[in-house]
Image (cartoon, rainbow, N blue to C red; front, side, top):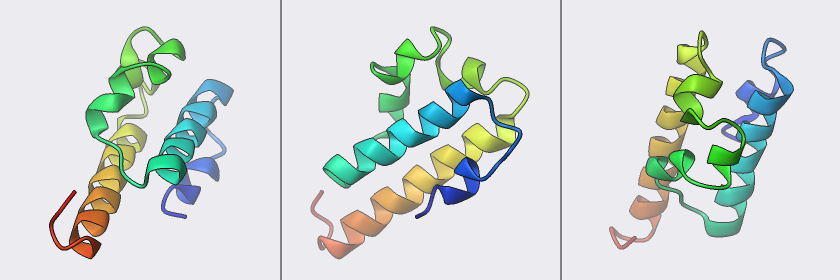
Length: 84
């Protein structure tokens, strides 16, 4: 799983881990997910300041999550022949 490296990061707090799990749940259910969804419910319920505030001090983690989303989404679009 593309996001397992984040789940294995022992420095993450329980809410941060839950955030990553929610990303995985959304991708499992839908196959794709826009990065903008990370600023909307249910993600915004974890921290009103959004992912940037939730992962404050761990910018490398949230940037990594956004990058993984781009990779996953581009892979799905490529497999579907550009239709997405």
